[in-house]
Every structure is written in C-alpha cells, then in structure tokens.
Length: 264
Ligand SMILES: Cc1cc2nc3c(=O)[nH]c(=O)nc-3n(C[C@H](O)[C@H](O)[C@H](O)COP(=O)(O)OP(=O)(O)OC[C@H]3O[C@@H](n4cnc5c(N)ncnc54)[C@H](O)[C@@H]3O)c2cc1C
Image 1 (tube, protein in one colour):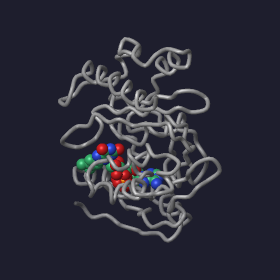
Image 2 (cartoon, rainbow, N blue to C red):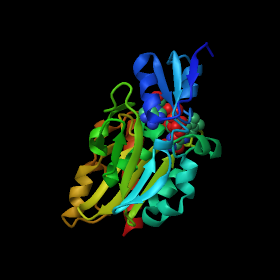
Image 3 (cartoon, rainbow, N blue to C red):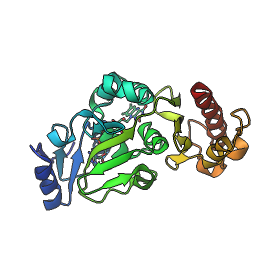
C-alpha cells in the first residue's frame, strides 16, 4: 500500500464535507472491491472516507408497500433479515449467495450498486423490481441509476444512502456462478409485478439490462418454453477466459426460463 489518509466521519454531513474538500478523496464501505483495487494501484485516492458506521446509512425498515435497506447494510444482514425475507424472499436469497462468508459480512448493498460490476448480483434485482435509490442529493429510479459497465449516475462526492424495494413474493434470482469467484457468469432476476413480468440479466459483460423482448412475449400471453436465445440480442454479451459471448447468451436464456418456471 502507499500512504493515504483515513477518516471515519460521525455523520453523513461530515462525510460529504470530507469528500467535497479533497477531490482525491474516495468513499469506502465494506472495501471488498475497493481494497483489491487499491492494492493493485488501479486507484490511488489521497483519503478514504469510511461510510460503514454512518447512522444515516444503517438499518432495514418496512416502508409503505415495501422495504428500505440502508446503504451500509451488509449482504449477510440482508440475507438474515426476517423483514426482507417476509416481503421479498428472492432478495434475501440473492444476498445469501454473494461471494463467500467473508465477502458477505463486509460487503454492502450501497458499495455493490455504486461499483456496478457487470457481474454483480444486486443490480439485476434493483432493475427487475423497479427499486429506487436514495442518495445524499436525490432519489433515482434503478433504470436511471445504472448507466453501463462500472458506471452509474452518481456525481463525484454523491453518496448512496438507501435502496427502496417494493414487496414482491413472486420473484426469483438464478445465478450461473463462476465457481472460482462466485460472481455471476450470468445471473437472471425475474419478477411478477402488478405492471407485468420483468426480467433483468447480469453478467453479460456490458452491464445489467432488461430482456424486454421476453417480458413483452410473456405479457402478451406467450409461454415460458417459447423463450429462447433467438429473442435475445447477442450484442449484450461479451466473452472472456471464463466463457464466450455465445455461451453466456445461451445460458442466459436457460436460467431465465428456470427463474420464470419457479415463479409460475
Ligand atoms: C472474491 C469476491 C467475490 C465476490 N462475489 C460477488 C458475487 O457473487 N456477487 C456480487 O454481487 N458481488 C460479489 N463480490 C463483490 C462484493 O459484493 C462487494 O461487497 C461489492 O462489490 C462492493 O461492496 P463494498 O461495500 O465492499 O464496497 P467498497 O469496496 O467499499 O466500495 C466499492 C465502490 O463503491 C463506492 N462506494 C461504496 N459505498 C458507497 C456509497 N454508499 N455511496 C457511493 N459510493 C460508494 C466506493 O468509493 C468504491 O468506488 C465479490 C467480491 C469478491 C472480492
């Protein structure tokens, strides 16, 4: 490591002030992504501003018609939460399948969505469920928040404070996981909302996206069995040493059918 300053502010206002007064400063939550990045010198912030203990980012609470999860909530706490499981069991299952126990006990929902790794699990749930993201400045729909691979609508110095999900019993996340990292080689989140079926795919390579052709097919009375990769644009997928674009494309259609079958 190189020398850098570290601050643990006591309030969101103090954290925002620290980030604003030093443009080299960077927020850190669980550090499960950022620490390896620092070790590899892929980022060299002058100061880390630790968000993990901020009271404004803590807690899981029932809100009108759904659940709100503070940004500093770990994956393990989401997985173990009775409140989350009662209204959105698929989200508790998703959180319980992230990485390994060490990752789950340090990594946070806020850090995960701010990072927006193209193979991360949470972004697919936010997109499929139509979640909203509260930041230090505004409230954003998931649709507007995720803008591409490792890219979000967050402005410099803006902090995610919470994520709000609607209640949904008919939702399912299926991850075809990379056995080494446990990230999604491809993951699919399917949800039956009052407005219709929603399907979001992660792991394609360019960032999370909705499979709108399959949604429209189902909402117009089409069957699950008729959903094939022919309806899915191959351009959403890239290849790497873990699998080709064509392989991911095929697996995506398979796990979407499995997720939908589990809902039905
Ligand atoms: C071996 C391994 C396996 C993993 N497997 C999976 C998996 O299966 N599925 C999955 O989804 N993820 C997986 N992850 C990623 C893991 O979920 C991380 O916890 C997550 O990506 C980052 O969360 P964090 O709290 O550690 O964020 P950090 O590493 O602290 O921060 C990540 C980025 O987000 C920014 N940031 C952090 N918090 C906020 C905030 N509140 N507001 C604004 N910006 C913020 C930071 O500045 C940084 O740029 C894995 C990671 C590892 C190392």
